[in-house]
Length: 418
Image (cartoon, rainbow, N blue to C red; front, side):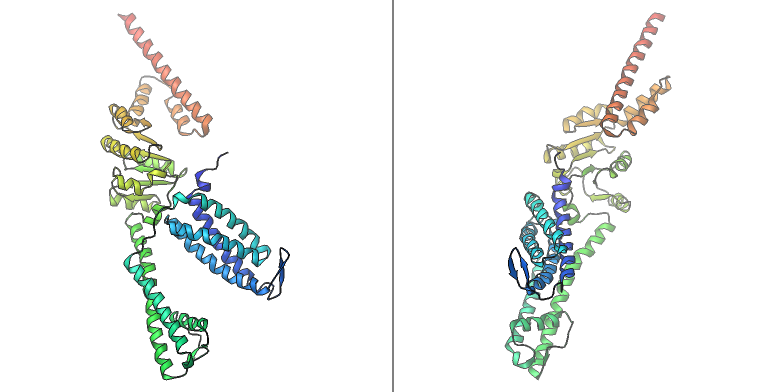
């Protein structure tokens, strides 16, 4: 049986990367201090126990980097894809060097995730684009740490406990994070003045970076309140059903689809979008027939498109756009007027149903003495699986044949009366 896109697609890549990151963090923390500094054998080679300790805490750091990469994969960033492929072998190697039962699942999952992410190279095609503010904040952070490290190393005679570049970097990072352990202290006026300057520069740079990081999160909350989707949410859409527009039929359609597939509704009205979002539906506020809106809605990777508003002309335009963007996608539509069924099919719809005409037919037949309309409706609504659907289709065919026979009998009776 062929694997579905949900199991090996872009979404699976993001989920696996996230779980590998979490497992690397948990495994690294659990293995810190296990075995002490005692030497151990790995594949017949004696390895120093210090290596196990180092790979434990560096494995934890690698896990955090994988978590960052997972968020980058959610945005379909090619840079995150490269970083993930680079980090997976490192994570697996760290798990091997930790040489404990806790690290075996980490190694196995890292190899599996490497394969899944590797085959989805085409899914992560977005280039990393940093704003001027982001570039400036990162440059400020790097410059501040560089200033503190180089300055502390150059003025090591003015400090207690600074003798190497690592000591200097440690002092700069601890000062900038406002931890201040107090193990490195200035012992002259020059050292105190330099420490004050490092404190101001590094703390300011950290504050700028945090502001840049949290600003998109705040914007995301505003977007949700307004019924809008963020780019990060749109990027992870895959194998979903794209519902174009909102009409009288859209409500029951969403109720039917929401429990069976991921659904994205594209509506132009912000108030309607906000209401749908409050009810838990994924909504994109935009013109359903616009090419850019459908591209943002990931029509190229959707499993189906539904157009069921009260305006057949708008539905036809939305269907035409969807068919041009994805010639292979399944498109279904509801025709408000029966004469527009063929028009919607010519626009690109695979299946067109006229609910009003179908309902009117059943009601008219029931009014004229026909039986079984309600039973047929129950069979259609309750059909699950291929066999049930085939039985329902057969029932529809039988009902149609019965209507034809009844019509012929009525016509024959009328002729005999004459």
